Image 1 (tube, rainbow, N blue to C red):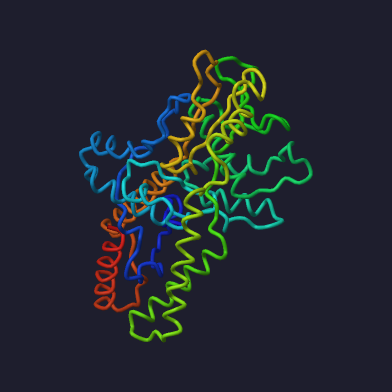
Image 2: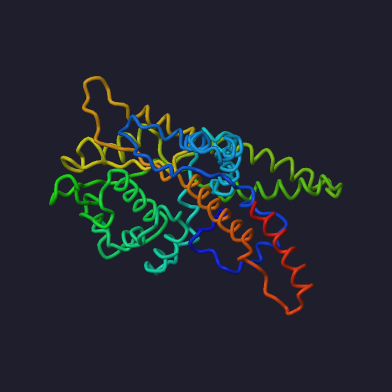
Length: 376
């Protein structure tokens, strides 16, 4: 989990072990960013530009860091959040490239067989802006009529529920009215413009990256270990041959994987999940919510091309939603650090006194220098 500290959870006594660490990912983050929760349009929206909030924030507030600083700060957050094993190199090098925040990043929050605890943990792992009001936890725990009797709260439930709430928030719906609808349409909410009228929407995702095979992972580990020995001059003739063969086999496996890294082609997805959630497939008036949070930059253009309406075809009833998690985590981390720095500067946060005023003063100053360096 990337370092993200909610300002609402900061203790009045920050003598945390984190301050004793020589480096910290979070200490490199200090952007003051905008909320980033603008409404996505229909299929014409552009979630490729998930970090356009960076330039906006820098331009709108002269106290903000430069755009260059902001982009570098989000890059560090992306690297920490890349649970795809580094398979999003373009997104990690260029903040204007669409970054896929994978659902697998949240697997550690799932407690098998315990929906209550899973929902609690998963909600706490999300940015506060996406989990406030306990609506996210509530929605995850509502039984899914499509899986009656076997409702399971996991990282996919988290993304589906968060996407539903984000869409409702963008549309101005009362989040307390968002709830499960039926076995065929996932969610409903009350239309504030037409009292008593329900609006229905159904989230769906993009094809996901395949996990590398066990063989590929084993070969990578073998090559890595043998290369370390070779660099230290300790490789035997037999190990030299093993390294050569392992490199060759690994290259073959990686080549096969790279030709088909996703669990579904864009064309198959367009004829399947996309079609099943749009074009009134779920019923007249039901909006398909294509949540693209876990959609990588090299993938989204191909998906949009695959689903583009042909001449004469009716425009599908679909909207794109991206949770912008890297941006939200970065923003909240910065806000928490700014609050802590303010309290340090005000003198309201100090180490425990040992009764010796001289020693206490020295300890306070040393602590303040260390904490300020860590938080800056």
